[in-house]
Image 1 (cartoon, one colour):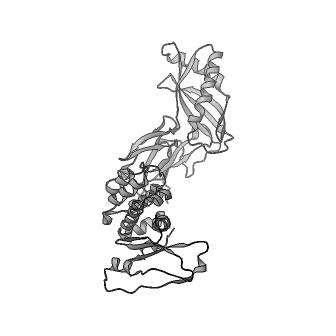
Image 2 (cartoon, rainbow, N blue to C red; image 1 turned 90 degrees about the vertical axis):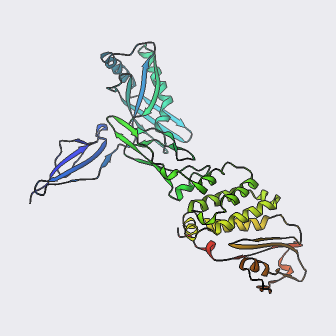
Image 3 (cartoon, one colour; image 1 turned 45 degrees about the vertical axis):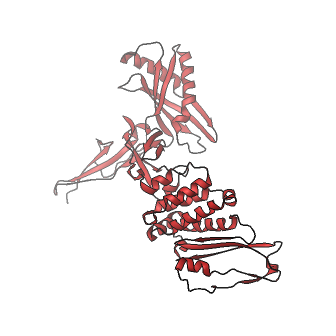
Length: 427
């Protein structure tokens, strides 16, 4: 049987390697890159390409430094070489100690070399050690100590040097781009060949869309020879429209009354509500302070109206939102908070009759002997529309001693048209 012809590649350039396995005995900085192989069958005239595998060295990063000599014209190539040799001799082996909050880094400069296309720029290779925590933007942490090291080298060679810019060379630097039609996305410093994933922006809750899988992506391209470069971000999923876009615009509203009123208006087209609409609306309802509920009965009615409309959304949207963000359980919790804190005087009653549920809250004086729950038929009639139903569903009798230290009792009763909000979470 004829063996296939094998050719290994590094960063899409052929290597002098033709065996089935490619081995790197002692990994060096220039071994970093993306490797794959191509196998060709001469007999069957068929070629197959393997998946790529990246070789990285933990703690080693390259920085592109725009290092200039003030007051001098642009150096020629031969002058640049002498200059780089001087700087390399001075900086190689220099320790850069970084202390930033809870991040402690020690960086040893390995080498400094000139970039062929831009003699004014140098490629500084440094290794990071003694890292006690992860740092998302390593190059940013190195800027200040590196500038100080260059300044000290400048004094030694008696030539004024300045650092115009320091950016990551073997990884894509942190960058902010517009993503979708709502806000901008902060892309963290990312290794070559890796894909950064960020939840689509929607106000203060940065993880909501991450839970729902509404995520923008961006890949760090390039190689270790010519440097890294960001690919265009894939943000089409972040182009939020309709209800979702309107809900995202509510996150900056501080007033609970305004927020509750806006939610009622935005979610009134219940059959168009999507999974993300329910999840986002639930988060917004949870922002409303209890003190605002206690001070304004209209806030309560608007919250109840919004919850009723969310509970009337398509079943698939409700189930999906419950599965991903536990929204149904959280809506039930919101109803409990509202009924407990709605402002009611003694013997005053609040009635809410919606499409998905009816709610009755009443404060009554405690009788020394018994307490009787008010007639629930009004809730039933309002939801089902059966005006002939006149008798209560149930009477609950409790001894007065069960309500210690209180002369008034708040009683709430609710009736739901189905069990939509009571479905268990699957995650």
